[in-house]
Length: 432
Ligand SMILES: *Cc1c(COP(=O)(O)O)cnc(C)c1O
Figure (cartoon, helix red, strand yellow):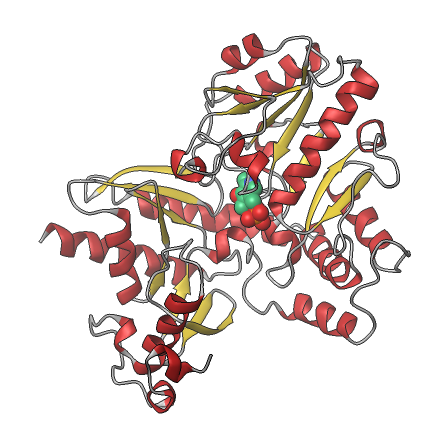
């Protein structure tokens, strides 16, 4: 179908923007942006509600739209772009590999997977890596590994394995994963659901321990719940989960797909609590914002249960993703990104806490990651994000009145301060 068939004039799409500067106009008023949004509206399933900005390029913490306006990216693709847009070292690793080979399938070996897996396992202190592509695939893989471990190692009766999860969790969008979501919007009309999951309140270690029985094979939790609004569990929670799971011979699976790889000021959020789970789930930033790359990482006594032919992925462990993943691991091995996240995070949290009582009712988070509760009497999170966009800051609301701030870890201190100033200005405008 040509653009004309869906009702707009191609020449208008290419025309110069009719609006320039941050003048309080809706960005979609520019012809190029309107055309792009129109095409998406007509030809892309409406499973998202994007802000009306059409990004054309990006560098570091900044992106530029089709009309040439720049925005500070305070979402960083839900932390998949932790190292910034177009990180030179990561882009170079991808370019170099593009010229060699990109895909072999795992029917053959490739010379990039081994070095990537060895480096990633070393980075997080484990033996083995199961490479996949998306975060949801890593979660699905961990569910399968935990069940197989339960039957083959722990001795759970066939078909009886149970996995304990937390209320408010977000682990992805597949049918099995939404089976244990507590977000009705994620589940409605998508059943029937996969059995074998038990839900307990997040942050309540006693409830979790009480839910463990002889058929429990694993506990699957996020060390900080990201999509729930950057919810940090109470002090001592992760330690108590570790102790309870160790006592009962139950696997502790930490979904670090959003928390991991530098965001919280540490390589893994579990480090903040001094806790070592049995399996880490990694994704998002592992692919450097360039390719989808995820992994289950653990020791041989658990990941070793998988036998040839039982599990797989055509693209999992491909040489292009492995080359980028290795460059990501090498970047994190220096500790510089984690240091930046920690230092800039202190600055961000201090700035945001300064807005308490000026339209902000709560600030949570760790490292360069914050969930900010907006007084619902003032505005919805969506309204605040739209006004932030008009001021050149891209952020995303979650659960009605919460906004998260997670800029790339390469953001400058000055730009970070400027973003907080824009939020302050939006809140002042809203309060009249
Ligand atoms: C994003 C996310 C996932 C799912 O990752 P996809 O790549 O979107 O499938 C799983 N768990 C957590 C904690 C996430 O934030």
